[in-house]
Length: 142
Image (tube, rainbow, N blue to C red; front, side):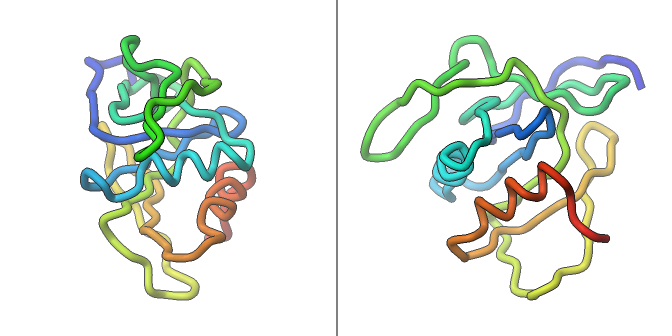
C-alpha cells in the first residue's frame, strides 16, 4: 500500500503507544467525552472533531488538522488544550451510534481506506474507556 490522498472525517482519535482508536458517531454522541475519559487514564489525543486519515505502507495514519491540533472540546467547559501525538496508526474503530448488547461480542470489522480494521460498538458502562485503553495496549482475544 502506498500513500494516498488524505481523507478527513468528523471523528475523534486517541492513541496509546502509537496505536489509535478512531471514535465516530453523530454530533453529540459523546466522541470527545469518551476521548477525555481515555486521556484521563493515559491515552493521548490525536485529534478531536476532525481527523485526517492517510493510507501508508505501515497502515492507516491518523493526524489532526493543523488548525485544531492540541484542542479538545468539553461541552459546557469549552475548548481545552491537550497533550497530543503528531500521528498514530489506526488499530480499532469505535462506533458510538451502535450499542453493544452482547456480553462477549463476536469480532467485527469495518473497512477504512481499503483496510479491514476491528470495529467496536458503544458500551454503556463506566468501564468502557478503561477497556478501550487496555484494548489499545494489548488487544483482545479473537
